[in-house]
Image (tube, rainbow, N blue to C red):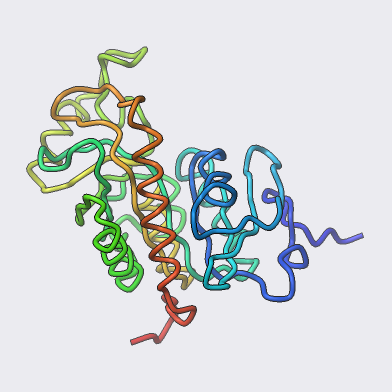
Length: 270
């Protein structure tokens, strides 16, 4: 018998009700997806869709009546690519990544958020979606909505270019906090090189998400709370982690509230 549930997500279109969501807020951490659905002002959690494979997904509703999914992508681009593929199969047409990051630029302090307008995409999963030279660009309408939301909420924000890489330690030039103190020659000095290229931050999913948006035809955006200042060192600000995540969530929810459902990066859209 055919199982209508998606293999990895663990739920199907019939689980989304008569007015299924077209918008998803996507997080690497399952607890952040749960926070969006059940512990965020302006969001009403409706039901748990699945917690299969640690990919927690929740059906929720914004206070303006618009339904949304709060979903977990897992860590890194390969996991995200699976989740996004299945979300699009379920009818999702707008995806905002709500993540965390480390600042590359000295102008981006811990406790602020970075809104990515495009990514330097150093990710193997993305190369299976489109060639390396294919632009990894966020949807401009989603990006403007995120900037407007941060301004309205008085959240300190930065808009710019993000380095999306596959590994947390070697790929982000961590040696002091890594079990491996030895870097490949091509990664030695990469953070300073990226700083000179005016990249704002490191994270691990946005580049692949943006390429998938272009190829699949959905609108993608990304906002990340800054947990580490890489000009000062490698340490993560654990004391401020919840506050930074909550700021990023608030910005994403406010942007979602103001996004038109017609905003979708599809072929032929002007």
